[in-house]
Length: 181
Image 1 (spheres, helix red, strand yellow):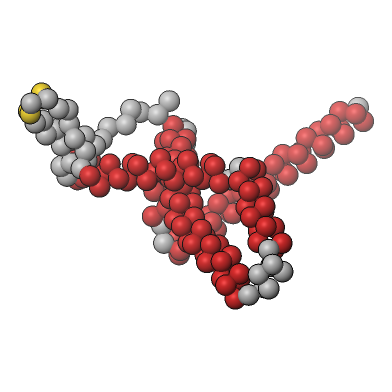
Image 2 (cartoon, rainbow, N blue to C red; image 1 turned 60 degrees about the vertical axis):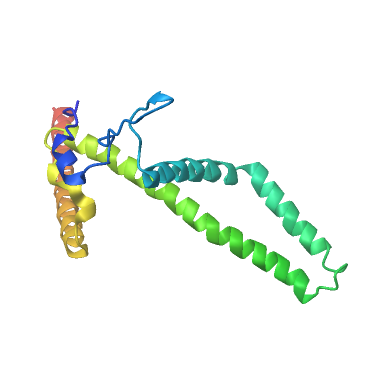
């Protein structure tokens, strides 16, 4: 099991207002209120929840069927509107707006998923005896450092494969010798 996460040193780095450090309590006619988060932090959290929800809904079969039905309805109405420029502009504008907004929502969701996955991998690296803990910060490496790291692990894998092959050959020779006796 990995050691407990100690964020005390990070409080100094992150500054006031983060991770509940802003403990402004006000008294009013309604009484004392608990700590308040800065508006930007509240908006960020609301956007995170909204992006996660929209990503889940938009990725469903039902929404795909609705989108396909809308496109089919648009195609069917083509002859009614004489395949006019306005008819084409409707679908082009709608798809452009939806695509533009979805890019940000999906990117936000993927960034969070990637951070969660990275944290889980970091936990495994830290918890595994014999693992190189320097790899916890691998996402900070330059392209050249990644190339060297990849070459290193290719050599390690090659050496292990060669060692397994040699051990396997030795076992076969030993088994043959036993059978011939």
